[in-house]
Length: 134
Image (cartoon, rainbow, N blue to C red; front, top):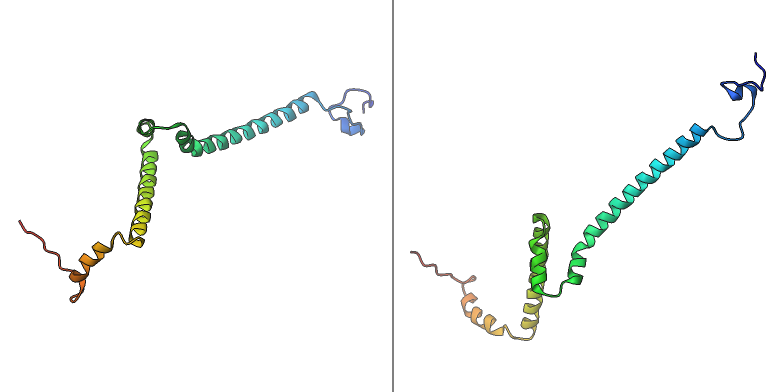
């Protein structure tokens, strides 16, 4: 058996606890912390990139003042994004048209259409439609 002051592979064998960590253990801890920090930064960067991509259409609209600028930006969109834009424009156009029709009907501007349709629909139910055959 060797003396406690001599070098020993297992310092705990003698009950001694070193006051400092072994340099390689400290390096491993630092490397693990660095790896964890890098992973967190990658996830944060991915989240930021995703958020910026969601805000990109809004940013485009903030800097575009003319139809030509909007057309130019739309020509650079990916097919999927252009399809989404087309759906949005179509839905917005339909909503505006519907609100305008509701306002016109409430104001009586469409009464002439209802009056013209009334004789065609009275009596036999649905109006007859005449088709030309050629």
